[in-house]
Amino acid sequence: MAIKIEKKITGYNVITEEDRLKAEQVAAEQQAHAQKIAEIVQLGEPLSRPEMLVGNTYKIKTPVTEHALYITINDVIMNEGTPQEHRRPFEIFINSKNMEHFQWIVALTRVMSATFRKGGDITFLVEELKSVFEPSGGYFKKGGKYIPSLVAEIGEVLEQHLYQIGMLKKTEPDVHQQKLINEKRNEYLEKQAQAGAAGNAENSEGFPPGAQLCNKCSTKAAIVMDGCLTCLNCGDSKCG
Image 1 (spheres, rainbow, N blue to C red):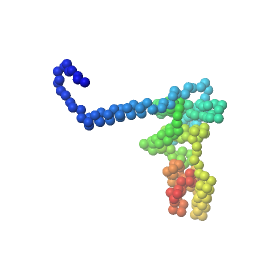
Image 2 (tube, rainbow, N blue to C red):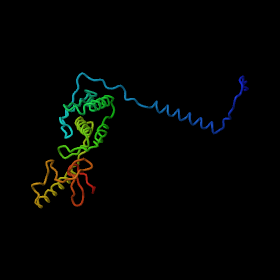
Image 3 (tube, rainbow, N blue to C red):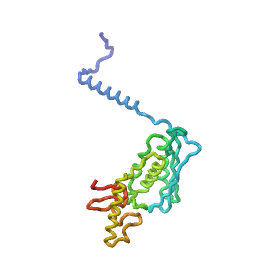
């Protein structure tokens, strides 16, 4: 079929086979990208707030704050009255007389509450919060557990709450592992007693004085027994 050109020809270009293949490749990539966008699954509209919510309030007192923090986590009951009934966090509030951290605490709780209401898996927040480190160093709470920051402490509270409502399952030492931990503790205490240190066999946290920080559970409960570093809290051992 002949095509009549009415305008003056100012230039021309011959399309080679390589140009054609390149154009087809670009078109295929654009189509794949558009299809990928179309496959994104939205979690849906945020959960609406019922007239009444149930929840817990946790009090935390840390060396880095003058006053205690009161963390309230309210839950919404999903699929009420069915075998699939369960609780999930809906909102979080943090109150304290200390106004030093007020600004970022309000921002954090609003973002967390929005994440709760959006639905889906929210357990990832625990690890995200617990991995925040204070540049000037963290602190040890009662029980000998190391907390890297105040934000991490909030993550600990959220973790505790998720354990309580069943969204997270605790991984505790099994019967055999707990038996080994108890044997190691008793063996260590006997050696301390024989060495004349019976009056100082355990510290206020219930672990031997001078125990090292366990890398797994962040508790000062790791001792060297038979040349092997073993944690008396979680059972973690360098010797397997």
